[in-house]
Image (cartoon, rainbow, N blue to C red; front, side, top):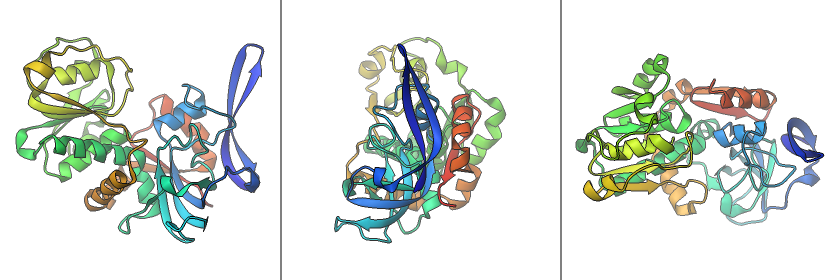
Length: 331
C-alpha cells in the first residue's frame, strides 16, 4: 500500500461531482510502466490546484492522481536508461491530467518521460524549481535565441508573484538583466526587489483593454497571464523585441492587433513546457543547475506534507499563496 491523493468522479443525475481525498492505494493499482519511482517530493502547481478543487477541466480520466511534477529515486526499472537508485524527475507530459501524477508515494512511468536530476541539485530543490522554474528557463532560452542580451534594455515579467514569475525575475537578474515585475500585490514589492526586480509595474496598467500600439517600454517580456495583459505587453515592446508567452491566468483570448508585429518587428514566442524533447529538457535543467542560487529557493518556497495538499490547493486557487509550494511525500 502507498498513500496518494486520488480524484474521483461521481454522477448524481445530470451533475458530475469531483472529490479529491488522500487514500491508501494498492501497489497493484499502479499503471503499467517501465520504471517505478519512490517519490520524495512533488509540487502544487496551478494545474494541480484546478484538478484538486475541480475548478477547471484538467482531469481527463478517473480515478486520477494529480501532480504534474515529481522527483524521487528509481525503485525498479526494466529500461537500461535507468537503474535502481538513480535520481530522477518528471515535468509535464500530461501526468496528473491523462496519467497518474506525482502527488503519491509511488509512480510508475515509461523511461522516456524521466529526466536525470543534475548532480548539483537536491531532490527537494529540483521540485522547488519544478515546472515553474523549468518553464521560466525555457522562456529565457527563447528570448536569447531571438537575440536578447542585457544591453538591449529592461525585461518585463508579468504574474511576478507566481512560480514562473518568481523564477523568471531571479534567473534574469542572475544573467545581468534589468527586470520590471508586474504584480497586483503592491505589498509584495520588497519580495520582488529581493528576487532582483528593479522596477514594479502595477498589474492594472496592463490588464485592461489598451491601444494596439503603445509607447516602447521593454526590450522583451515573459508573460504568464495572457488576454489583455499579453496584448498590452506586445504593444509596448521595443523594436525587434520578443515576448515569451507561457500562461493564460487572465484568459486564453488575445485581443490584440498585428501592428506591433509588423510595424515594430516583434516576435511572440509560445512556450509549451509539457512536451519538450529530452534534449531540450536536459539543456534547460543544466542551465538551471548553473544559475539557481540555492539560498534563494528557501525564500521563494514553502514546504507542506501530502496531508496538507488538498487544503493548500484551495488556498492556491484563492490567490493566497506566494511563490512555490513543495510537497514532501515520504515521511
